[in-house]
Image (cartoon, rainbow, N blue to C red; front, side, top):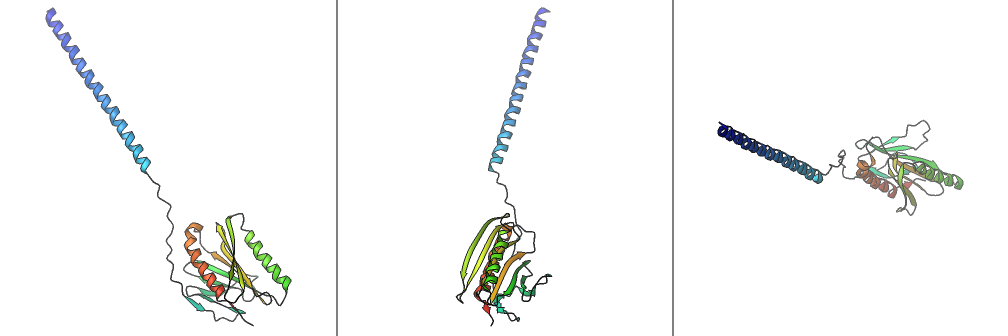
Length: 218
């Protein structure tokens, strides 16, 4: 009887040892599996590149121009994609207008002032133009001035603004004695300046075309 009891005891011990080993191996396999999953996730995250924020696509038409025929003290060429509209603000003066782009939700506002040989009036108008640009200085992170020499021999001042500002381009020109014309580019849209950049460049070319073809009427 003692011999049988001893054999059963040894058998139980061996069986327990086998199960214990199997359990240990199983635990090790679980740990290794978890480590592999963790490493794989880290590797995937390291290769992850955030997708850049998308912007609305704006298809820009080919630039074509026509001659202005309306009765004003000046004339110029403007885009076939635009229409001329009178400025309807309460304080608008004669010959104020919009070069309006329906498909782009944009407009170039033009304000005209007769000088009548008044040099002081011209100086004040030029000073006011620079003050209007300076008002956007808090929101604009860049303001650049450019002088454009037109085919007529006269000059125009262009002021480009970058940032989330109401107007991205302003300009003025004068013959120094009789005429003064100021313009500003506006958008009727909530899009950010980054997404509007191609349209701003497109309309800047139209502004330069306007100035290069500008003629004063006597």
